[in-house]
Length: 297
Ligand SMILES: [Zn+2]
Ligand SMILES: [Zn+2]
Image (cartoon, rainbow, N blue to C red; front, side, top):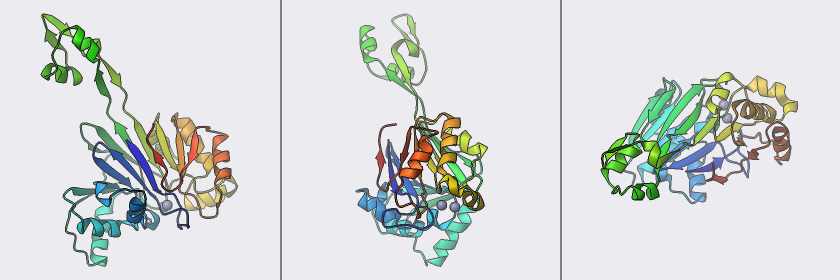
């Protein structure tokens, strides 16, 4: 599991910070969360192929979160891309996608599925679930929650001790089923332990709200916007953004393990003050830079 921050600016990109985008790579999936202008080039600079992306989650349709979408989709169309690109976003996402396909006289060339998210659990497979909840921003905006499923780790020493061969019986135990072995019932808990799945929450472009806390509840990592410092709280409220302090309060209230701040206003050249303001409330905080990678959760 790896997170790569591809853009950490607010509305206006700077020399150091690109528009919003984060890539989560997990078990062969490349889940891109938001796709600000220049995201495809940021992927290349990070040493990643654009073709790793097979899902794009759009938080909302403000330009700083989506202007990179046409470019990325066009490039995938000229690449050896055999996957289906699945795009998920708030109500209206399908319509927006069709508009830009028209605006740029697009030759799509790749398989694309576009989904308006209508329920909190909008995707799941054997490995993980993706959830979304509405946030409080100027236009329909979603926050996201990635939940890795719990797994059973089989203790091979215990398996060896009871003389069980590797094969279908282990598969059954792994999927929580007891098995009969040499006249005895073996429970999954006898020979394995549960490894808790990791949780990552993404809460940007919002005022503090209940759903922000719900998305972040007990997460291993919360990615939250911190457009302003507290001395500009009124401005934050006017534009429906959060301050560093408010983001830290959400992390604290939700009981997350680690907070990563992003989406900084271009007025902050040095980010120390933002970190200091947040860490007074929630010490386990990091301010993201473009190309920051996180592999330990
Ligand atoms: Zn934004
Ligand atoms: Zn916005």
